[in-house]
Amino acid sequence: MSDDRLRLTVLGSATPYPSADNPCSGYLLSAGATRVWVDAGTGTLGPLQRYVRLDELDAIWISHLHADHCADLLTAYYGALYADIRLAAPIPLYGPPGTADRLADFLTNSAQRSPVESAFAVTELSDGHQVTVGSMALTSRAVEHGMPAFALRVEAGGRSLVYSGDTAPCAALTELAAECDLLLCEAEGDDPAHHAPEQAGATATAAATRRLVVTHVGRAVTPERAVTRAAAHFAGPVAYADPGATFTV
Image 1 (cartoon, rainbow, N blue to C red):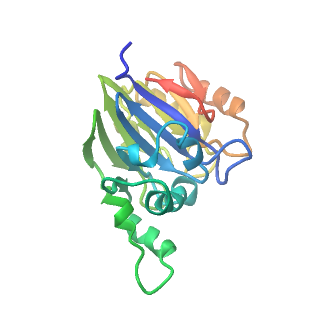
Image 2: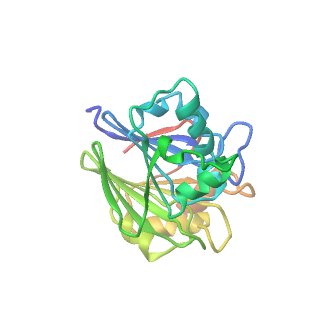
């Protein structure tokens, strides 16, 4: 097989805060020489560096601005500007409306606004946003989470992966995930702003997904139980986004 295969590496999948051995939501997508950090949840910057330095990233993509999906952008900012990294240009950062101001509000310590844009070239997502990053085509859809939130479809080398972000079951996610090779779907639990494991399985079935990986599993449910519950509603392979696991799409 070629090195151009699309790969998903799980940096972390915990919610709403990291456990001792599992950071919050964060993933590295790679295809050939292209590498994209998808969600920067609390604690994910550490394991990211096992695979890629900040100055080697082609882009960062953020689903929504809850801390368990974006908090490590704050430490990445310091790493990018004030340590051993020398950026040739700001890292392209795709995130919900208000991403740059949210970062600046936290990072500014004086009357002068912190130079967030020196570290990140921010593009605000919108429903249907499309961009090509290296060998990857990225399509974002607005989903239902009670705040601006997005799901992501990534296509590379004739293969496709869809990440739900955090969302209730909705038509936009099902449409985005149509016939994808792998659906990475959150399974927080019985909360109207999230998928339960059964709903993750049902979304995968409705979208005719070939493979399902459940992630962002709530602390009241074991990963094994989440897989079992999802598999009762989806006939294809089901796995858990175990931190450190890599899935070849």
